[in-house]
Length: 326
Image (tube, rainbow, N blue to C red; front, top):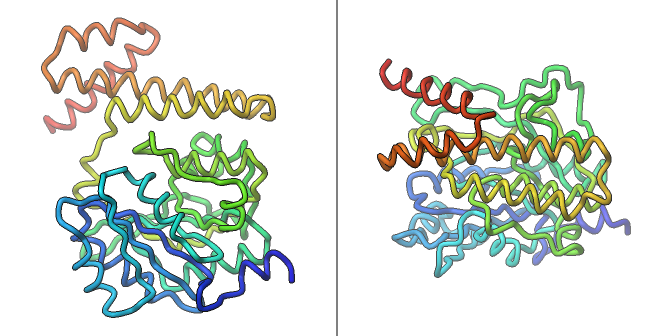
């Protein structure tokens, strides 16, 4: 039996897919996410909900949504660890041949996991992603917008490390592929001991996928959009903090230091560009944080500390102010 066949073969203890849902204060959304998991067709699965130490236990909401279906498993952490730590706990508990990531406030089409599984089996991929559809939670007309405008795709394509790192600037994508929610081959994850970086509260998906690609993973992407990224008031008003932005800068520097010897010249250039752009984000968020705290001298000092980027930062601040006035 080939590795692909072994990974695909379900048993009582080995479902084809473990769906991992990291959940924090998600009472409003968790039922919909679980419902979509249980509606998946032509695939055997388990659903692992990790309650990241919400103020009130999510167990009643999770069990009510499960409706007695024993495919749903609930784990509660005794300390908040962020989405990375919650997903790591689910990785440790997962029994499926593959692991799928689903955010607690997002949704899926009923054939999504079967489509991803088929692509993984046919291609021998260790990572599979699909396009997303953005929807607004309170939009009665359910206007849908593709996350990636990839009309030129005529079918699945392989994604290498260079393309993955450059995707935010790449003409074929124009948005980072790190936002997409992957399906991982669990045997590959366990072989290399991959886990999420718990220092990150943002971009944790990007760096676990980049780490896998740097260590030889095969990644496939399908243009099919089976994942619903649900936007709501909380997601629209959310801003990354200066500390979170700084953590991403550190993660990119650490990634470069770890893999520079095996990276191509193009990959090195892209990583350096990412570091530069991420540093700008970190600087800007530190300025915004100082302004919100009414520490205007500190904000002015931060602006003056890097004259090469200060004009751009001022322009963004003016733009934000004009939007609020409007």
